[in-house]
Length: 133
Image (cartoon, rainbow, N blue to C red; front, side, top):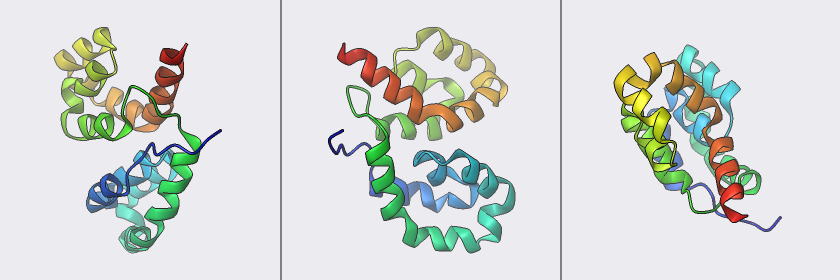
């Protein structure tokens, strides 16, 4: 598969500011360590500081792993991070029904938000491949 620039280092560093909560790790497709960072405050801030230097390699790995297309990873992640409770990211991806459910339930009582943090990169890749056909 050809190289595609699916993720941005600038967005990665922006999310790294909140990285003690694991946001940048979820963004780069690392949900297990994102969850670990969330519950341990970035491995007691030590892992968070180390990640400042690891972001370029996480960015390259995400670019190789995920499929670019009509749905932009960066915009979708910004919408999830800042407006996820209202379902803005799902609305952008064309998932109208779940967007409405998120809007009226606060991101499906936050469980939907957590699910999306775990699976958003795959959801976007699948949608981008589906829209190519």
